[in-house]
Image 1 (cartoon, rainbow, N blue to C red):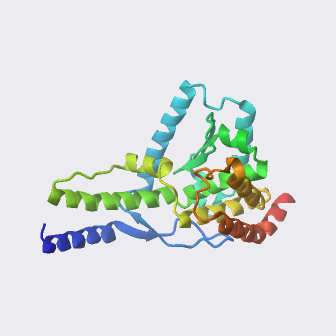
Image 2: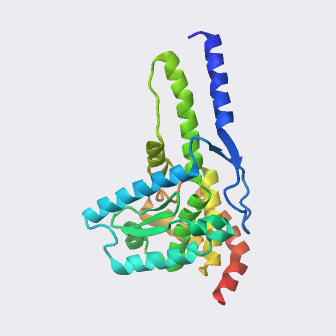
Image 3: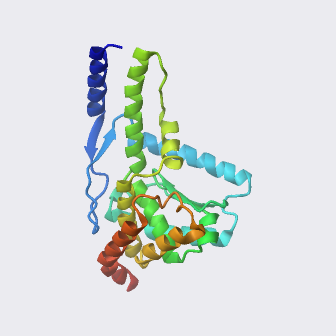
Length: 273
């Protein structure tokens, strides 16, 4: 391939990236001050991604049900869903439209220490988290608030946008080189939700927003610190996926302590109700 052709290819790919991405503000800043501009691709409409997430979530629930692994412990399910309701009631502080999402919350029987929230508010908590970490209600609220915050900020859509734009650029390259490099929305979402770690930026935003959601819901925000300490000490290995290795444990704990102190007045106010 000639140098001129490579240069022209790069110009086309850059033009596609700039033309398909728009700066958006998915959430209000809240007390914790989340105001980073985000870039979303027009190739990844919010409604379409939510629809794909709902379909994948339904499939996951169906598979779990067939194995007797869906909401198998009624007490655990009631507990998780009760905490989720209190957190969801507070999401309007970051985005009002999220109050109208079709939220769904279930417990999946799995030894994995994990929890997640797909686009549009599809939540799963694994029994491994409940049975191995044994979180208090406030610590469980910190986990779920963190995951809900990923959905509110549309971090999955942000990552999928990057993947889809990259795929278009690779498709142009394949037309020239004869190689194949494609991706569709469904596979990109699966990759983002279950294979790729969140960036340090995304993790920090979810940490801070999750702490505020928990405080507004009447859960002690300092539990986010004790939760992280439990996670970093559990089994002597790497922390679970939803508590990524970004940022480092020390800086993460320091940031959580700082933000927890900032939102303590919200917790005290909520506790009086």
